[in-house]
Amino acid sequence: GIFAGFIMACLVGTPAGLSTELQYFVAAAVVIFFLGLKDDILIISASKKFIGQLIAAGILIRYGGVEITNMHGLFGIYEIPQFASVILSFFTIIVITNSFNLIDGVDGLAGSLGLLTTLIFGVYFYNIGQLTYAVMAFAMAGSVLSFLIYNFSPAKIFMGDTGSLLLGLVNSILVIKFINTSSLTGGVVDIPAIPAIGFAILMVPLFDTLRVFGLRILDRRSPFSPDRNHVHHFLLDLGFSHRQITFTCVTANALFAAVAYFSRNMGTTAVVGILLVTALGITSLLYYLRSKAKQAHLPVKQAETEIVKRHKVLGMVPESMEVE
Image 1: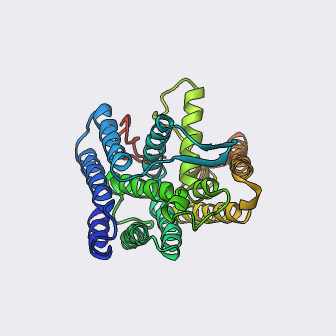
Image 2 (image 1 turned 90 degrees about the vertical axis):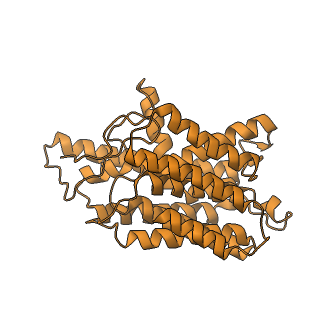
């Protein structure tokens, strides 16, 4: 499916000798694919799943140059030490890889967000002449688009671990290379607040994952324990259908990216602050509306069955189940 289409398009579409990094990107993708495939078919231990993700991230960092080396003024920080760079890069890759998995809770949502993000990255890299990354982005966009035809509600096929983890992995590569644009192009391209723009492009899945992890830790629970605190849960409880949730989240993600881009001259820290305050305000409003609906004993309308997936690191609930 998505994996085969992505790999074939990358290998065929990338000009020979253009980038030696591609082989390492493919190697990491293969690791994630087989990890996801085994998890879709069999239950594997938490440690093995996490180790598999660490191996894929390690390949990208050590051999593919997928490493955050500069914060571009975020909180006044620019160049960072090598050790801190490696730790931050591992964290970023693993969080983004799992973020698309976690938000894959209703038909079409993860795929539609992935289509939006990869198209944005693809157009950008093509315009600055970074064809390897442009091919990667468009290859994933094409694979996801073909998949989405059969994934919109009522879905005939589902993404599973193999698709959502791969989608997250590719986006982690693209966003880190996006942040490192100035070094990729020898300093020709210099976009103010570029880490904030990269964060905004992945805003919905990334912020949702970080927010939910934070809430679970504050509640003294494992960050990977299942609950109904994801944004799509809020919207489901407010009566949104799968299609309405997908449209709402994709539109919001596009608006966040636009706000970050047009606010870029304010600086990285200021733009990140605007994004976080806005996102927190929206999620607080959704939480309030859901609470009011429950207090008023309004019927909770779930027109369609929610896809509840266990987290792809700890695997604590069944692969899928219906939520009434």
